Length: 80
Image (cartoon, rainbow, N blue to C red):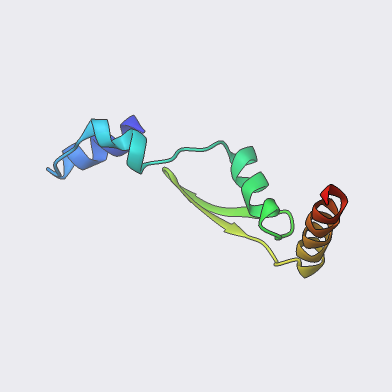
């Protein structure tokens, strides 16, 4: 994060360090992979990185989404 702040200062951009906690999320690669997969996508591939920016590739897996919906519906029915 400090690299980002230093870049902003280098180009004379105003920097509000206090707002970084609310506006900038820096997550570990494993956690980003997990978030992508939980959205119904296959295991993502990190194919580009430039400082704090990452680009991922993943295919949408409709079977995974259907399985999740099916489990949620089964759980709702079992609670009634």
